[in-house]
Every structure is written in structure tokens, then in C-alpha cells.
Amino acid sequence: MIFLGADHGGFELKNKVREWLAEWGEEFKDLGNKVYDKEDDYPDYAIAVAKEVAKGDNKGILFCRSAAGMVIAANKVTGVRAVAAFDKESAQHSREHNDANVLVLSGDWLDEEKARQIAKVWLNTKFTQEERHVRRLNKIKEIE
Image (cartoon, rainbow, N blue to C red; front, side):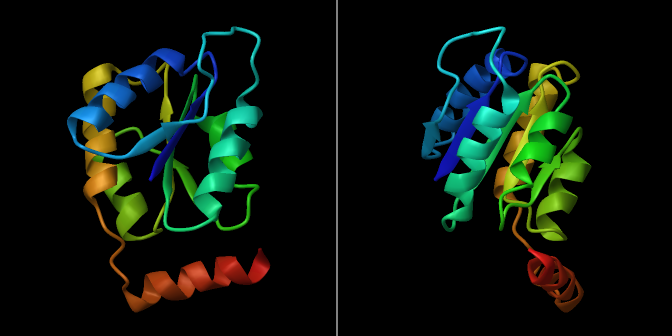
């Protein structure tokens, strides 16, 4: 399951990604915001998505203006490894090396085509399971 969440800064891009996920046959659930509200707060959606992702073998995609706020908030939830990706390479690397389970996309700095490419690569890339990457992730788990 892929959980989605966006504040006003990522609301339009989230709606585009919903279309793409449906087109790609991906199962997803939108945790909001369901309506555009320029006064909403990104931590509300970041935490809601992060909590669902932390429950198991789920992924999340979050959206805000810069991507930074959502990354900071989502990473407060134990078991979440949220990253901002701005190109296909960083999206792929975040999955292969860091087993990122939450992708955050910028509503301000990504056009639709670039966001589509990033989301597709991120969703289709697997964690390598290489010993060095597992070792590093285990070190993170120790401090959580």
C-alpha cells in the first residue's frame, strides 16, 4: 500500500500522482489533505503517512512546497526513512542504499514530468540488501 499526504504546497502534485498511481495499477490511500487549504500544516500529513508506513511493508509519498518540512516531520516516526528526491538518480539511490520508505516531492521545484519519472523509479527500485547497507540501517535502528 502507498499512503499519500500533502499540504497546500503539494496539493496539486499529489493529485497528479494519484492519477499516475491508478494508471500504473498501484494500490494507494490518500490521507489528505482532501481539499486545498492554504492554512493547513505539513506535519499533520507527514505524521499521518509516516505512522501508516511504520506499521509494516508500506510506502508513502508526501508533498509540500520544498519537500524539506515533510522529510523532517516524517523522520520523527520510528522506522521511517523519508527522503526528498529531485531526480531519478537520487530516487534510485535512496531505495537501493537506504531502503527509503517515504518519498517526498517538492510542489515548487519539480515539474510534472520530472515528478512522474522520480515516482516511477522510486517505486520500481528495490533495496539491494548489500551487507554494508544493512549494517548502516541497523545502526540507525539502534538509536531509534
